[in-house]
Length: 227
Image (tube, rainbow, N blue to C red; front, top):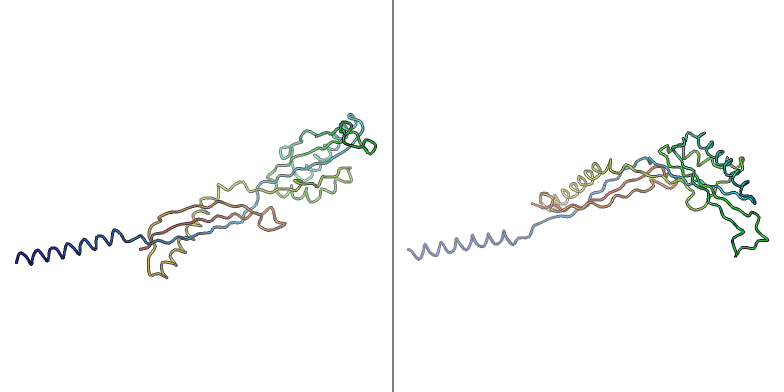
């Protein structure tokens, strides 16, 4: 009788140990999914390096021309609703061609060349856009706006921190939706978050020629436990 009880106890103990080990060594089931959030926003800052160049053989005459044309340019900007707080007149850069040993002096038209830059940095997006679009009007005042690299208007979105929380929540919600679909397909249920990684936010033009509209995008990667 004692032998029978001992045998039963050993069998029960063996079963308990077996199921216990199965629970310990069974790996956690999980699914890793990605959630996307996109939002179109309006740019809130316009930056324009507005510059022109003039030449003269007299420094004093060059100075007077710079002052006169800069005032014309400032008046032009104010006509479009831009105030002096919206732009900065930077110091003129003057080149003395007579000091250039590699230049053929017989072909030099002007001894001095000056480049004047006015940096426009404003939240008045439409005003800057209109002023840029009509800048050829300045030609009648003797001002030819430089069209070299960096002369285009750059539109920026600076309020990313204001929309970050909502976008992260939306991306996470979309990730859970994908996880729930996977769980249904595998006869499982979505459990707690095991691990989550937030991707970088990207800000790009909404479309070519529509630089004042921005597309903000973020992707989150979330790993859920499956039950």
